[in-house]
Image (cartoon, rainbow, N blue to C red; front, side):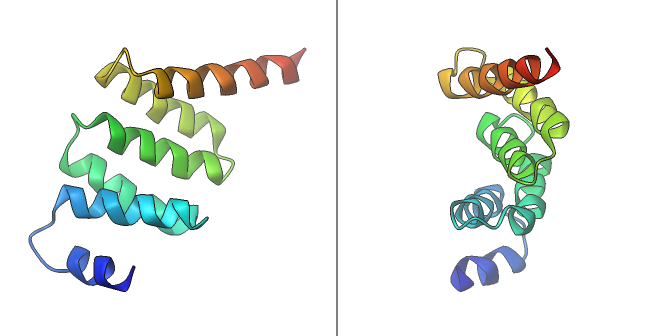
Length: 101
């Protein structure tokens, strides 16, 4: 992960490196650290559904559910047929609905 961090810090900013470091941190259970890299990946490529999904996942793992849903819905808009994105939105929406009843 140190190698990724040094590459990310070097200009120019590369979306794929930002995404990769955010994803690696998420996989390591470090969602709060992953969030800024995921956000930067979205900023660098607003058409990348996986970057939006990764940012949503970082937020979800921090229990910021409403914000996560916003980013997952953006990801769904970028790739409407993506089953993983649709399933995640459905799962969270269903659990929220059950909690409210």
